[in-house]
Image (cartoon, rainbow, N blue to C red; front, side, top):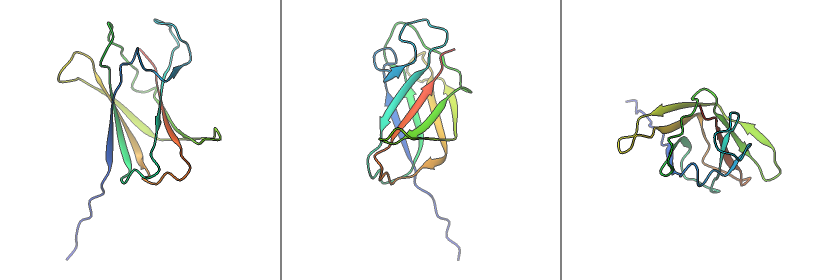
Length: 128
């Protein structure tokens, strides 16, 4: 008898007001052509399950911000500043409760549950 093992993965949902809480941006002016919004997420030392995807929704602001789905930057950064790139796929999905899209970033492979180095996940989104 063969049992199928189902991998448990975790989805993090970030309800961030994009204009009020970008962690940092390369250009800090609105309506700038080459801006990138970076979100730095502190990962707990033991998440319990691998992190497979991150969902970001704009909850505030007057204007809807559209993003390029093919220009997402994702990496893990250690306290020393070393960066490890993460393979990811970004989808812009319509939100059920607002006219602003939900951004879903799926990591392949998922980010491991153990985090001995106190790394943080950094995701950069380019506005369209």
